[in-house]
Figure 1 (cartoon, helix red, strand yellow):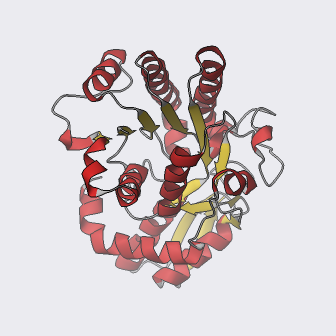
Figure 2 (cartoon, helix red, strand yellow):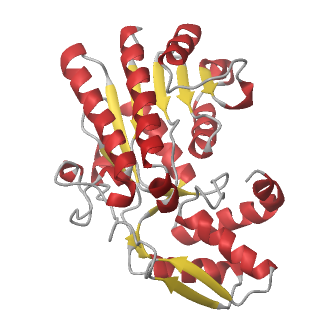
Length: 320
């Protein structure tokens, strides 16, 4: 089976490719096609139909794991809503349509918790996906991903195309994006706290009032879920991927500060948005359908992430 991974050199992609290689024998590893990054001999933009056709004709994959995406935190979503919608929508439209035409056997779409309605009852159940409008600050991104999920379901009905959708919560871990313009909450907090420690600052400012809650999934656990789903899941219904445990932003900041050794003052900037009030998934379907359960606790995952960041800080900051 030839597996094409888009976004293979991104945050999640690195871990998915590593997990795939662990699952396959050495003689089969050349069947894992890592798309993106400096390895490409041509300028590639999956938002362009011609590039998608070129990729699919060149590699002829049996399975596609679609991870390539335009992503970011609340600030980036507010600043570039049109780009977030168009680029995610265009990549998915092109890949799904032409992989279907070329006889691809399976297409895995990684969606987002941002697709859920703003006021979804906690824990979020997959059947609540269409019960309302997403949280406004990241609605264009969430709606694009949700539309692609519906596209896969429509293609299954009309063409018998085997498309599946996973819906992970906020991920974190080694190789995350620490660029302050695009980073999500955990890398943003780690960067801010490290900067305060390095500059001997006693105060760190955090967006919002700290009362919003989030659920966080260690990236290696998400990679494991993706590989499990490729192997064992073939149904049209979306599947939540997470831990099923939430934490307030206030408590998260306190935990990261403790692990990093910052003993100063945390100030919450209430002029900035909180985002969605609560996020926590019902993860029972993943366990029932392909026996997935997250293995990494938040504290252990944060320790690994902080350690990786400190070991690679100079290179990470140089790439901003």
